[in-house]
Image (tube, rainbow, N blue to C red; front, side, top):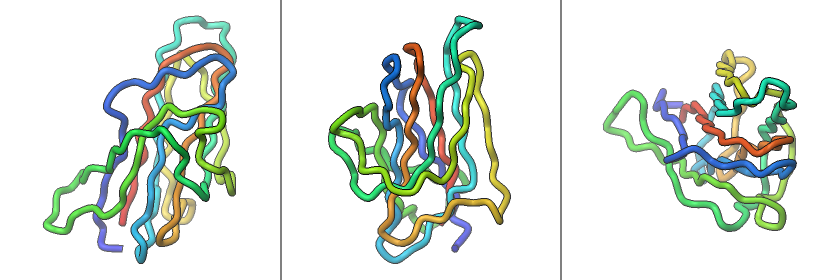
Length: 153
C-alpha cells in the first residue's frame, strides 16, 4: 500500500425506514490493488431514549446492487497519486441490495448516539483487488444516519 488515505462519506444524511435492512455505503477496490478499511464512523439523529439500537453490518458483497448513487472516496492527505477506489451511497433496500457475502463485523449502536471504531492494523478489513465492501443498517424505528469509512490503498 502506498499510504494513500481516504474517506468515503455520503453527501447528506441517509433516511432509514423502520425495520428495513438498508445499504448505505459501498466501496469497490481497484482491479489489481488491495484496499484496507481501517475504521468506521456512524452517527444517528434519533431523539427517543427508549428506541432499540440499530444493527450495523460491515460485509463483503458480490454484486453492486442497483439504485445507489456514485460517490467516490476523497483523499484525506492529498498526494499526487489519485485514489483509485470507487464507491456509492444508498439508501437501497430489498431487491436492490448488493448481494451479501461474508459478514465481517456486526454491532449495535443506539439511535441517539454514534460511534467511531478505528481498527488497529491487525484488525483492518482488507478488500482484495476487484472486491467490494458494504455497510448495511437495520433500524427498528425510522432514523437518519451518517456513515464514513476510513480506508487506505
